[in-house]
Image (tube, rainbow, N blue to C red):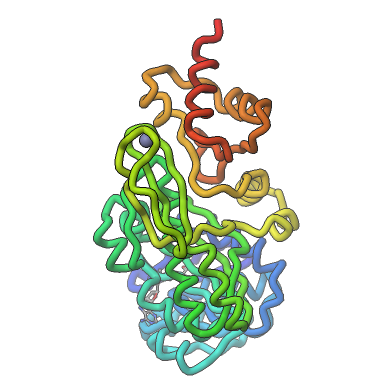
Length: 350
Ligand SMILES: C[S@@+](CC[C@H](N)C(=O)[O-])C[C@H]1O[C@@H](n2cnc3c(N)ncnc32)[C@H](O)[C@@H]1O
Ligand SMILES: [Zn+2]
């Protein structure tokens, strides 16, 4: 017997339950409280913990559970009873179920990659789509072939690989959603330990579904000087960086916003999840970020403090902030030459 949030559940050795994903479920509950989900499908329920917590903590009224495993479905039924909840439990292949039934809010929380469920989830979801991925090596660029196979996108492991991963996952989901004449925006997203999580808001519009491709594109990365730039799918890439090195090209990726500032500002700032929401809300929305240690290694200097760098960039009139991705990285709209110059100036100060 386990207590998580307001739920108490039984687990079983044959049914998946990962206590380390509690943070993700805690964050979800804060987010779900702000949603007006009319029907919610916990498409890959396992113990049913996420859907049960959504009912108990976010006030969801119409939740359906699903798992392909018979043992999981039996456990979900017992867990529902234990929490005095009556709800439908499907024992179906999630993709088949989602092709048949449309839900206001669909949640895909698989073991590994969500790629096999994305098409049917994009078809089924009307207003909200929440997706987890735990196949980090495919998303972060350490296994580029897996990235291509699962997300039809190419990346290598740069210093901002967590962000590339999130953008690769978002980019693939967006391309699935637009097939069904729906447009979307990212409400909130993050990476933590071994998971990536994205919540989308959807809208039925074929015009919007086309327009969104202005936010799908490629990152051009220079491995020599650390420069990076990005282009949407309608543009033609530059082959060479200004330092003379050939760019590497990563994508297609989502180049749009990774959160909706108004939504994130409405989320509770309590506890560990509150810290994440606070960090997200302070982040400027630029594509990619810079890691202080990677830049210093490239320049052959010792790392300055991150707040010193951010202050110096702001003093020069640039936007700059910390990031949700790591404690040693920052975002800015300044170009690499300016950033390098600022690093060297701080380094030379007595
Ligand atoms: C990572 S677990 C879900 C964890 C759960 N959402 C949580 O928060 O603890 C993935 C579940 O998906 C189920 N599953 C795998 N393939 C499926 C499919 N094609 N259709 C439905 N369920 C599936 C597995 O049986 C497993 O219980
Ligand atoms: Zn360069």
